[in-house]
Length: 187
Image (cartoon, rainbow, N blue to C red; front, side, top):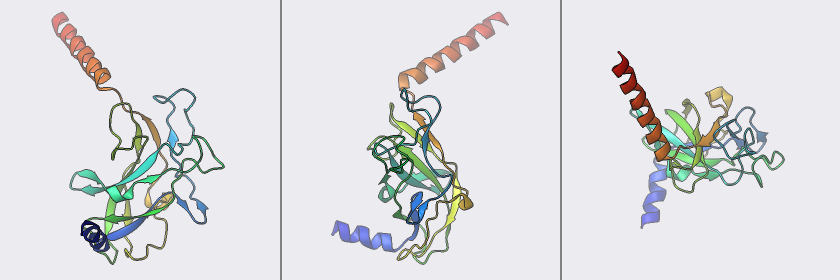
């Protein structure tokens, strides 16, 4: 019964074909790479590999909400595997809540990549990154015909880096508070 309800609800929503690799080859400018800093040694600038997943987020009010059915793995046999298409994902259908099944709804999206199996990937110690916001017009949920993640829609490649440990952030905050106290004391 639960799976039937899930299947029915997906057919009541518009769809996008989520991924940056199509049947005709990679779409230029959309690969996901490690940042130049805040990544494991030797990984800076490499394309992310199969230890990463991608997830699509859609705008609801002022925030972006994850679409759990959109999670898809990255290709390649290892980070930096250009021949194996590291930095790219195979497209999957993502159904956008609150849109019409016939398509034609303009939605604002973000794409998140992370090396953590949990949805969202914001846990401390995770390597993650998000694209900038971009807009896509949904297509008919029965047959999305094109890969929507192109530079024409405003989607561009992005980088991933480590999420700071909470203790690091706390120490930064305490240091800033201490500097402010010293400045006040001198004034």
